[in-house]
Image 1 (tube, rainbow, N blue to C red):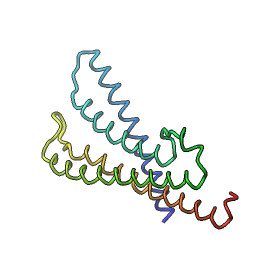
Image 2 (cartoon, rainbow, N blue to C red):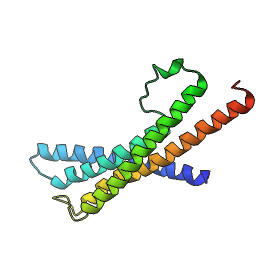
Image 3 (tube, helix red, strand yellow):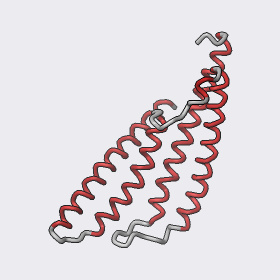
Amino acid sequence: MRKIYRVLCKAEEFICGVGFMFLVAFVFISAILRFFRISVSWNIDLAMFLLAWTAFLGADIAWRSGQLLGVDLVTRRFPRKVRQIIEIAIYLIIMGALALITVFGVKLAVTEKLRTYQSIPIPYSLVTLSLVVAALSMIFSTVLKIRRCIMNFTAQETTGGKK
């Protein structure tokens, strides 16, 4: 199971990196062509498509690796057990929000299936699905974070809190 998860994480990082490179390339090419008064509207539409996917997949990568902003001014003065309980509660709230994003994102993707970009035949539902895929991935990452917190919590219980 861990190997599958690692492979999926590496694939997500690869897709995000390649998507970002293409995003930059499309915007750069569009700017160069616009300088020569050549309009290529599909470049911008494809760049917006890639922006959605790279932004949301990048958010999951940042969430998984703990690189998102966190504020602990109040909780850092609490005892370790209280901090861990608060951390688990916050993860559960985040997971609930991600579940709502997933449910409503799927509903939006279904309603957007007939709408396409102006210059390319890609439905908007594929852009909306980027949010759903990232939210599902973030839910899985959050479950692992909760599991890790619980394991640390129980490990401290058995060792008498001397960790």
